[in-house]
Length: 314
Image (cartoon, rainbow, N blue to C red; front, side, top):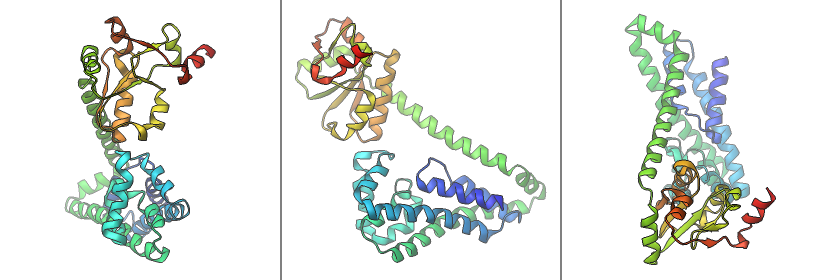
């Protein structure tokens, strides 16, 4: 009984939007049905109820708040600036049939219910197609796990080993998922670090009047010893940069700089806004100090930025 509750809660949590991979758990549940430790119909019922409860919740939120809910969900998706258009495009092209495949599309998985509510789909039609989509999704993994379990029946010792170490196998799959995500993040960070712009390159670009968008990400305390910044730089905190990400121009290079060792803040924020669709972003090698030490021009920080006063208050 506890296994079905765990399955229900896990699937519900993933469909609500938490970063929990359900696929390994569904495969494991399917494998355990071959050992008769779990029953196929209760497994499918747990998955169906957990997923549909979440989808119904998002449906009514989308119906009540419309576009705002979809945009909120897109804040957690890669390429946030194009997320809404792409997701709503699925419904424009495929209509209610989108719900039949939405569970297989990570970007559409959570927000399909909200978009269905936003577009005014009838609740009865939504339930019908959503249930069909969840069932297809659940069967593809559970039956796949069941097939694996049936193969193991040919080797009783292996079957007993899998049944005994089922939890360990799931943990191993989950750790593999986290490792893969971490590896991709490190690879992205490495790409950003190799794409840094040097102070001399940036100076040449400014001298040539190339269109640039400079962002000074330093902490307010960093302005006390030298309240200056690069010419034309927008002064803002990392949190503020995220809030204003939709206003960042996409038609020019975006250069971020800070005073952290190895440009840590600039690199981290470059990765963050790349996920929001700002592809032409580069950290400044050496940051503010690297630029300053080479004697390149600096200008006073505008009082309108409000950060000098914040620093003095600190």
